[in-house]
Length: 214
Image 1: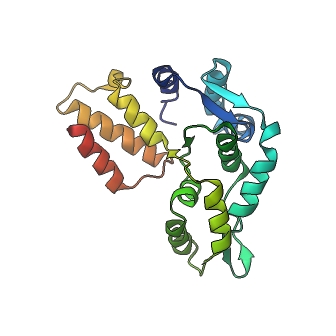
Image 2: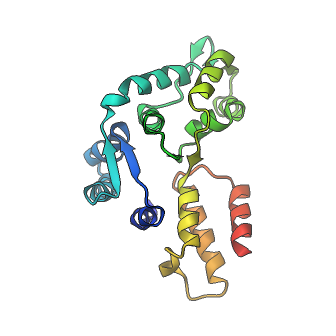
């Protein structure tokens, strides 16, 4: 949504690895939005990256059972009014299942719920209570079961990817002809990503900007 998808090709060349897409993620990024007016062009851009080999789609034949297992655990980690809260969708869990199957280095996801369930389930509990304005209970056994599955998983967001791209100079083509151009560029990138859906706080943005000024 910030016209930064092209950067993935250069990032892939820099780190010499692969960007894998689970079939469930491909459906969410391509097939589903292709049926809409709002996001069809974004879907076409993603499809072009797949055709060019920037993203490789992995068949879910080896991960379908694990995806279902992860979803069942994740969606019973919290309850309200005696019912399980469905907090995770198929796409996110298919990506996580693929990571575990492939023993990949990191999961890239902007969606806050998935990231917090992996990294800070107690913080997610607070977020859910605040968001739903009701009493939400944690199922500690299911939380522990999920944490056991995802132990050691590293999570990245588009913020981290684009900060690296900025540090590598890949985004210098956007440098404005103005005072403090680099500070203005990194500010624009970080806020653009936040506004378009990446879960990042203003405090985190300020911290990254401070680091990049050094």
